[in-house]
Image (cartoon, rainbow, N blue to C red):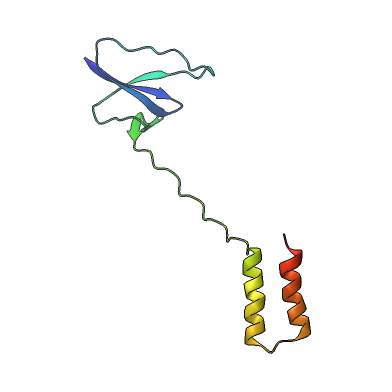
Length: 106
């Protein structure tokens, strides 16, 4: 009796224990073949099969890409203008810029 890993696109999609004959699964609906590869009891679903070396390895997902810096919101821009007004002396130009930022941005 043998154990077989069912391989689809180099991924283990099934592990069949104690098989008397080599299992045969038909292709997927898109036509991709499913191959039976003899294995031991350490092989589990989701592992990667390397056909060149005939070895199985754990799947390691890729590192997620860092999130981009969020764009400042309208409130962030208004607060920045107000903080600048509070830090410096208030001028008509700065006050108009702060009001314009809050009124004209959607």
